[in-house]
Image: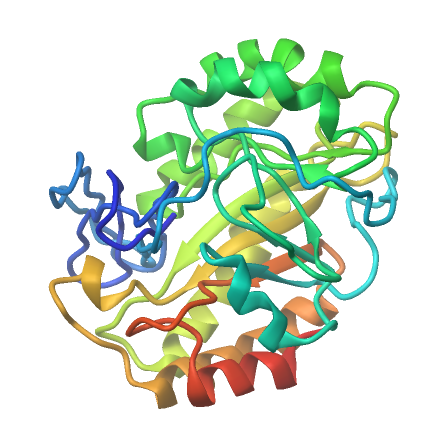
Length: 330
């Protein structure tokens, strides 16, 4: 959900106010927390907000446009579990050259695009169908995903980007189900924000309208409220996953008839660049990570997750924040 002032985006913050921010490349966020605000931003402009859990919107360099997926296969997925195997933890990035510093611990990675942009090391690259404008390019390359990617992600934050649940459900058969049918590639839902409840409602409507689409897991985003303590944000995040998203997902089955799982592909704090320069202290970020990752590692309903985000800019995983993520990842 979050980019860093590079393209259009949205953001919702978990506090008394929320704002929309452009994303640095191909994605944006909104969050749902307590009070929530939703904002809509267009190329480089801030958006409106609604009290919510918090949704970052900062990506750095725009991810490469839809093209071909990384060449070599990096392992198969387990269709019946909604998991690609290995650690649950993954890496959200824009610059693939930064991934090597995280070692070989991480099982997967993504960049809001359909092409990895470079070598991702031992992390399996998961491509995304970002938006409606990407559908044509996606149709031309989706066949090459078989054998090279363990999973795919649907539309980025559709609830704040003008994509209705009914539209997404109508496009999945042609864009996902048919071209990837019969393969081991896990099909993920679009990734709505947690903005003022709209994201969870969007997800429920989509899954209910796409029961024959072969969806294997539900993708969600969440961002923290900078006006609350790290501990309060950690509690709000865990409550959102346990009390809001899990009950929704439990109503549906994956393509094999097994309980559907959750991928938290974006969560954390909105970057300063997308929040009027307001920064979150590394100490608060590290505390938030230390209090949420053990929960995610042990949650039966959660298959994969990725903190926002790999990078060197303010608000990214650097220094003690990066160390905290690497230490607590599982």
